[in-house]
Image (cartoon, rainbow, N blue to C red; front, top):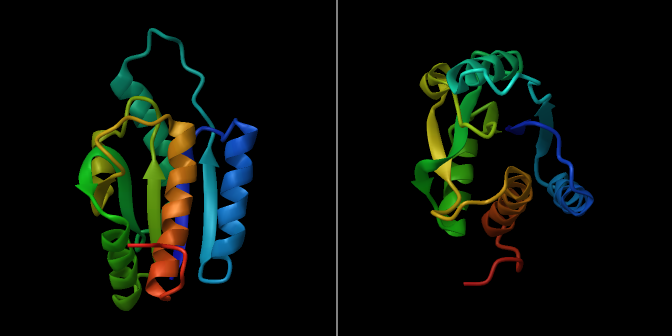
Length: 157
């Protein structure tokens, strides 16, 4: 199985880039991980949010294959504990999912088309995080999931 992370916009903060690189490096022992950053759409402030979300969807859609299994990180998604998320990853591997894709959308969320395309939504917390911070949290949680799956001493109950 491969995991692809699609982020709308660039990772800007250096400390977040360093953190992401740390966990991506660690994950290379377990799985092939790809990070795709979709360029932010430079649109006038007068553009409707739905139009902006549609433009972002067009960019994201170019990165998806028909057989990809897609989950959106969204505040209204299913919440997992770290162990629950590791079970989710493990089940994805057991079910022979070829490419598990996680998407972090733009500031206004996802278009209706992308929500229909997705297999589900995942929430990191009821709290709100910056889109920059979410990237690091997601990569760390994927790493944590693999250490749990492999019964390694990273996660403590």
